[in-house]
Length: 427
Ligand code: PMP
Image (cartoon, rainbow, N blue to C red; front, top):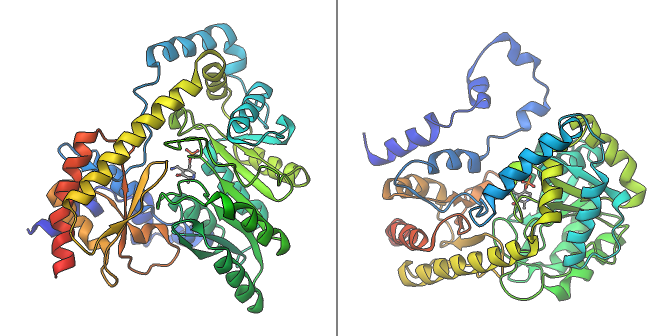
């Protein structure tokens, strides 16, 4: 067995999901699936995530936050206290919209980023911002509707929208994020084709996967273009507070309360395992959005919400964010230095101001997916670029994450990746 077959086997056999097995089966129940079920794709990120926990591999794949600087023992005591002292509340069903305390605290978190007019009544607490993306797709999109997104964009959003048979239309970015003229042109072309464009899904700060940020000077322009075209903006901002240096950039939602549905998350600034995020919904859209959230989960987890509330109330959460920003900045700097030292001519990359990711571009015509097998054999894992676009076209890009790996491992991972990329560039 060659190395490549070996890695391909690891990739495919180990990660075979229920969806795969269903696709391979000829059981009579196959016919019972909805059309929608066949639009839910297996996530390349989850596949690679499963492989990357193998001993000896350096994973530059997963965008997990660093949790070790959290006061874990104290938080354990906090959970114990919540259950002991508020057990009937924390373990019972709760309000569908989320607790009032946490909605108020979410407003404080947003104020730290520049959204100063949020009202707790306009918030719905969600099960991570992932569930809010699903609900947004569900309440706004019919099959065949168009959602505009950045090129590239977050794989979880692609999966959420595609499940509702939405047509995702990537809009080009440059180093300053979405290009306003390209957005206008795209809207005009789609309208000429008679398409119904419902939303722009955007990650303006430290886009996953590219690390690119929408420049401050472009932000209102993007809102104005969408406003003029009656397109709702779905602003996904889990990384905004994690700017390495200086204040966070003001979100699109600030000053545009009627035109932007804003998604926040405690996953990157606290812990993803609590599965708590929030949606700040324009008032005129709030009721239907909230009813749809409730229909999915009945209520967000009271225990999780109480833990997040206690964390925000009793701990210096801003200090944790400050420490995280320093740590991610140092890791990013190590990655950029290693890329400069080891990667061959012909490979370029983004230089992020925050967040978790660097985006590499190989020469046109190369496909990074097959290189993943070689990389696994060399002891390093990345996510191929094709995962982050709605088309199934091969991609010459790849995503590296620096958030979850110590600096020395980042350097080692890039050193292992370098010969794989060099062979591809030289071939
Ligand atoms: N949006 C983006 C851009 C993300 O990167 C992620 C997580 N990787 C999410 C949403 C989902 O986050 P959550 O844990 O809040 O569901």
